[in-house]
Length: 229
Image 1 (tube, rainbow, N blue to C red):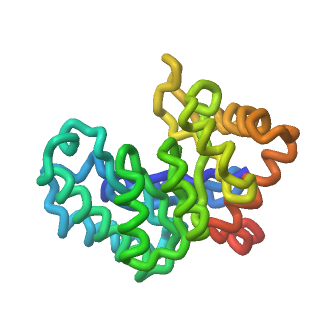
Image 2: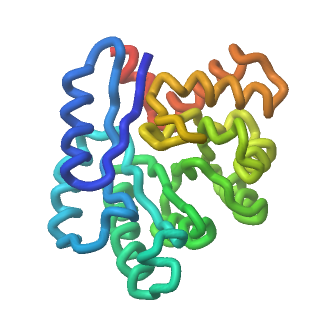
């Protein structure tokens, strides 16, 4: 068993790296590092990115990073969006320099996130919990990017629509824990819920959905050699 845990700022990214070192055997924990769009305000962004940069060589991805236009600080604020974009582009530059895939938070900002990835020249990205419009989803898939499914597949029409239109070989399974789904705090073990709901949406067995998303994760995060070791 293996888990990829995300950083949301320099401190939590450091904690993710420490977890990856502590759990270097079964179960394996791998780390992603970055600055989440909810965390960018009030930071010394240059210093924060420097701290994240120092961790990149120990991570399997840069994430969770991106834009969130549904947040109060950005909903009607061009300055808030500017700050988020500056942080996002900084994280993308790190991903490109260290040749790491990117885990993208794109809530309400799907097209701007896609455009930023293209601008920087990112080759591997996953749009986490994608619930955006089909037109952007098609661009994501045409670019060779992935989309992740969450337990929200049990009830979110937008999320179901997105995953329905995404080939199984482009889907990753996640929980986004400890996010709350319908009043219940999620945990990493809830990936079983995601896989079960994914199987229903795709009309395949749970075993097939599990095998596919496991293969996809190994490919996306380039884990084959690490797991073999």
